[in-house]
Image (cartoon, rainbow, N blue to C red; front, side):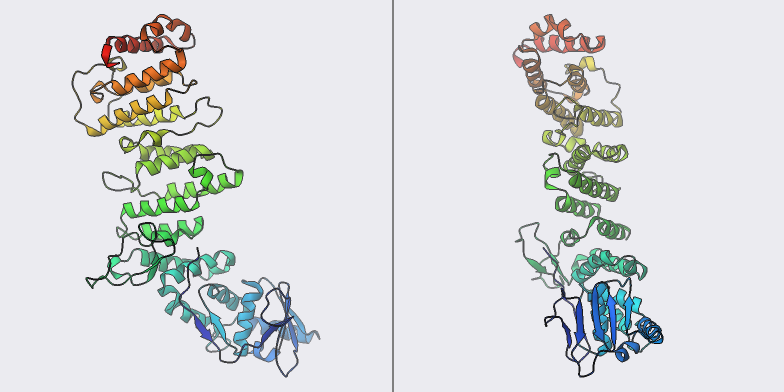
Length: 495
């Protein structure tokens, strides 16, 4: 999908007389000339293209061409070479047509290249009043920077024109224009934007109107999110920094929605499915991942402390494991996840393990998350031997939800034959007794674990033969496994 430019500006009044070998306006030809009764008296080389032109129009508009032509004439030559021209031959053709007074159309797709080329050629007010630089600046300020989509298009075009576009502050001005519009009050939005994430067709362009009229549809707060997904990661990062820097005008949940949409747009499909990808996909995913984590809001409401759901953060952590992200990035994600771990689902926690791990899922990572949550809640001094006691029940819904999540996760990973007993017991005994009003889910997990690891699910058989399976375990773990099985056996019908 490509953003549609809305603004354009026509310069000059004479008919376009530029031709290429073979006629027409072919850009594949290396030889271009002007249809004229006067023969060409200067050849200008730009990259691989040759322009057969006339000295007088060029001398009056460009200080660089003035110097090059004078130097060539003094040496008896009729050819000059313009090296390092930003925008190449296409941008030079725009500048040359302006020198001849021919009609040339500026639009958001070519205006940055034309501006950089005009600067390089010295087509400024010092050389001629009403210069190309002056006219381009008028178009930028009165047209491009007043338009939402045109500002994005112009920003995208700056990438191929570095460092000129940076030195001329074209990148910064595009970013400022976009950030100012994104942080404007939704009621004042009067420009067109794309919004097809909610009940809109994929090609629909929503033309926003001022909301002063009761018949005007309300503009959603995240109206700008989708169009910014067209930016590459470096430009996106720069725009989002500008948006976030504008005080409290952008709520954290809207920033979180923007990051979620960008992740969905740019992360490789294989990464989003949790499958191995090639090296290029991994590199792309890692760059996007690092940017998204760096841009995560530092505040938010109680249900979403950083403006992002726990599911989204866990998906990022899953991707971090998949692409081998650094420890600092993983730690940052884990610190954010534990603030709302109780809102996760079992499927969110099924993070594939990376070799050389033998288990299907990264159980150690989940153990670390649960451990952080418990320590943060001040419950890290619980007695794991009381895992089956039900004397009292917590009134903390978050802790109850987490315990239910842990038991459900245990039931899911218990079917892995490579899951160590210590990991299973460690998670099972990590929750305080008051957080488990019912043991049914834990019994189910133990049943699955025993069937997979020890053939029979009967607790007595497990207890009788425990020494066979505890050879590689420390004594404390062996004792806890025995205690769990004895208490499970005493549960009778509950099992």
